[in-house]
Length: 379
Image 1 (tube, rainbow, N blue to C red):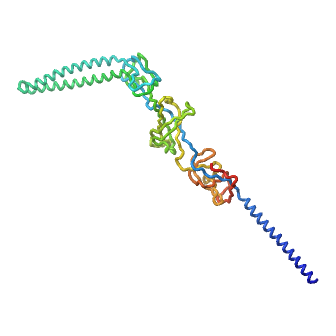
Image 2 (spheres, helix red, strand yellow; image 1 turned 90 degrees about the horizontal axis):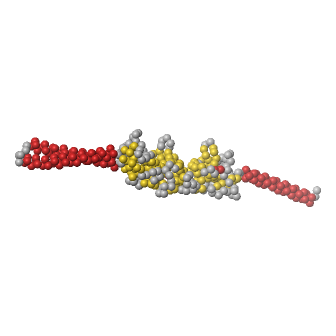
């Protein structure tokens, strides 16, 4: 073989080895690219959302029975027969208005007798006073003894005491006679009349007595509600409240917290609260069933997230958040459930990226990629 032939063989061998090397390098690069593509494809793609600061406006709605501001049963204070009645159910009356008159002849006669006894006692006292003055003057001239003077003065003192007793008796009977007119104790409406002309009535509210009238003050109404212990903070004095009634659909009445018990019921775990509602036109009737609404928004710093972000684990409630391209399971505490959303009390920050529809197998430290196209705006 000539030198020229040997050279051409060497060149061919070099070219062959170069082609083989290039092919092997391409295969290695292709395998590396395939491995990287496979690794990237194995990283789950997640959609995320940001927590919304604050919770939706919501109120605490509690049932309650409407009661009049004042409610009174009216009985006779003197015994006798009903002469006439001047007020019937539904009538608006003022304090001091006469509701009925009672004929009590026994009291009238006793008063006449007491006044006659008073006149007699006053006459005796006047005579005793004259006698006392005369004996006191005679005693100075030694015309009567000291004993006689003292007897006259004592008789006068006794006469004055008798007059005072007769005056008290007359005042008592005049007071009883004034009760022959049954009057309204406050401004309000008559809700019941249980008497009629000619009825015999007894004084007092004993078993033998019978309620003549029933009155209610309805210009302002009271509503008592039991506020659960976790929401007792909204029932502070003078706090505003809104009241609704089924009888007035779509209408809201303004009220305010007048007072509360300042003590939690140890059995029911509730706070008794009185809400007063103005009722100047009398539209709302006592006994009406209504609902008292307290505003709850703004009481605490909370966040709201969709319900499909929650993970229920044995160790407690969790959500997945993306941090440094990895999923992190964060424990949270929730307050209110709105159905499609929940209010989170603790565990989240406003800049967290919360994973939507997380896999049940998701664990902390798992690499994830955020689907920018599927990113969900804040709820």
